[in-house]
Length: 381
Image 1: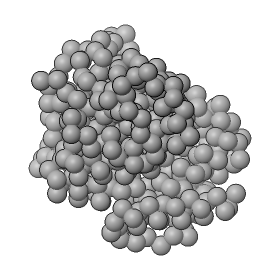
Image 2: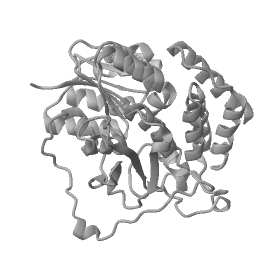
Image 3: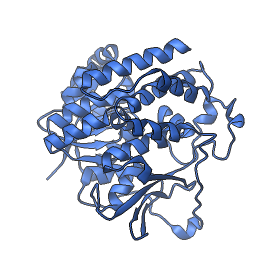
């Protein structure tokens, strides 16, 4: 039976690759969304002919509506539009590939509508993990990880999220563009330097998060929620080749790794076709050609983000949300040239020190705290 999906964030790196996978595997695209990249969005509408398209930016939505008035695709706008395409009766799965906190509300709406979630948006679980997991359990909804690391763990566990024999998870990290550099050497790195990732072609925000190692810190928090483990059961190892995407260790010392060439199309396809495995056009792994795989411990002095995230998930409540909100604003300020690279982490630390963590009680509380943290960070610059 043909699967029907909605894609939140179809113009980004994950979104465009998801469309390629859907074309290859005959998956029907019922709805797509973007923030305001309407030029690409129009091309996608004309190629994939979705029933709906949601544009977060209201002005851009009006322009798109005029541009595609000759099609049968209905244009929706703002957060309400994202939530509507996440709850359509015709869809089975919602793939969330938007960047940042914007993914939380439509993901929760999809869960309440009992849609399967293919999750590529880290911030959803970092900011609202307790609420999201609680709602997923209440509604019997499966959350399938699309992040290459969490997909790797999910695959190593045989399509499960737990095992009574599991000792720990081992998340691999590329180390980003600044691997091996000291904190003093990071003082004057540029935006161009930070966006020069050695292994992956990703959006600007997640690429900067990889450069600061915040991305890996977020993945620890995400893994705690997805696999129900405390942070001290989740290790991180730098693996420059990006061939092993993550590993699990059992109580008897056995370690199982999931390997493959560095392409997001593999975890995307696995999430969209689960529990089946289908043929793909992806490049196959040739270990003889690669020859060597290397591993290093992360440098937590030069790159403090991992330890910041470990502290936040141990504290719990709104602490991870505070880290996420502060980081989103700080990365945006760095990308626009308003702060230096190392100031990203300093601003995040300021937020942690100034916001007392509270127990997560509702979506409204999460959004209110998120707004307060963002305003605080902006006031410091």
